Length: 293
Image (spheres, one colour):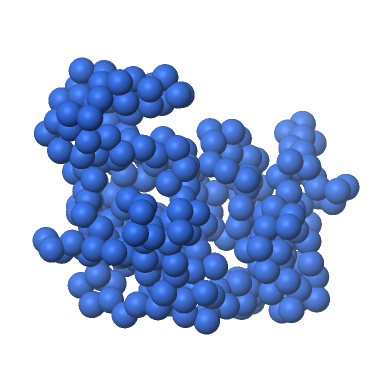
């Protein structure tokens, strides 16, 4: 019997579902909350509930905290310690570290030649105001966030400087400013497992929201994108060597643009829109990897 732990959150739908799927494959269930993990470098041990995690056959990282913050980097370093000492880890913690910070993800996408909405990063209020004026309308995004949390839209001439200063003073000294893209009613989550395309779901936005997140009334729907869009998503995710991920894309009049690559992927979107049990697929994938060495 293989013993595979799941790094996740208790009572989180996706974490619990993945732990259940692993148990279905192995007969063993362990959902590991990083709040209760300890790393003793002098003994070379990482423990949870009294168990030396290096004695597991592998771990799958689903969630490492309730929300994106720089503190999650410390948890990933503990998992990197385990991984570098030989524990099979899906996805590799170093790959996830490159995605946790929005700027790190964006820089990697830019270096990889991936088309994105025009983006400027600055700590200068005057420069930020100039950028918003040039873009006409911009989304200011925290470097650590998901589901549009903490993001604000600022439009040229609408108390631009006041809005920028408020955003900066809210804990965003380095401002990530992206041109507001005219989303044609939806954007896309394009899912990959082991670098292989699974399916695409769309998030259709609520009429009163500028974004498509389900937190703001967006709905998951199935979608069959053109090959051009799938090929772009494949190229974007290939930069990060992830075992499971979703690429967020918007299809514009000038072609598809990538918003970001997800560190953990979207189980719920695949289930709601496509009827695909990503947790089960992921568990089977990991079992196959472990069997093949």
